Length: 195
Image 1 (tube, rainbow, N blue to C red):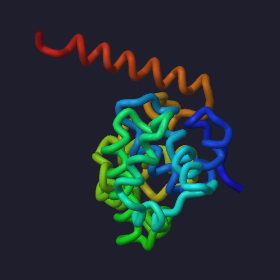
Image 2 (cartoon, rainbow, N blue to C red):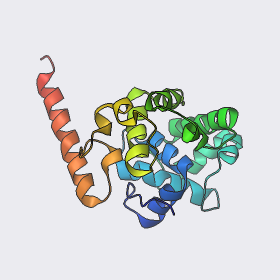
Image 3 (cartoon, rainbow, N blue to C red):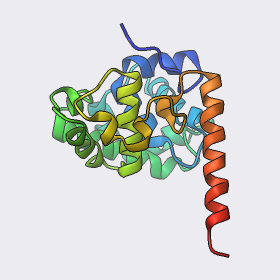
Image 4 (cartoon, rainbow, N blue to C red):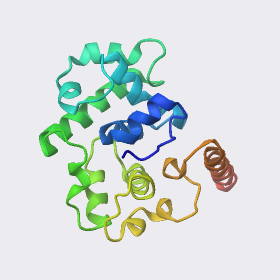
């Protein structure tokens, strides 16, 4: 049975996230400079525009790049920067094809430790340390992927009972708590910045 994911706050998009690890990775990749729900609804929009109800790394990697930009740019756009994000999504899928035969779950299927999984996530195109730690926390907290030491490898994002990232969103209430945390962090950083 698929886990119940509520990141997009849209039933069809969340259902795809619950059954498609590739959708989760693409949603995480898109989660920058736009609201989280918009980012995690993106994989569903892409699947619909590709004419199906699922995503395939081989299909996306092989898709004509200009046509894929158009696919992400159609109204409503999948991202604020559909051109650059289309390229990143295709790079991510190509990496999965090259390294894992297009199977996103192969990223974590045989890892022994959280540190090893973090290294694999860090190697993904478009995934820096923070994005990798958030995704590792999402895997552990919501998708049941918990290699030894996963919380430590995820850093503060792995903390139990925290509300700091997409990994902690299970519905509207937790989304509001994560938003509040991010606003407080942003205000604190602004206050601490040299004038």
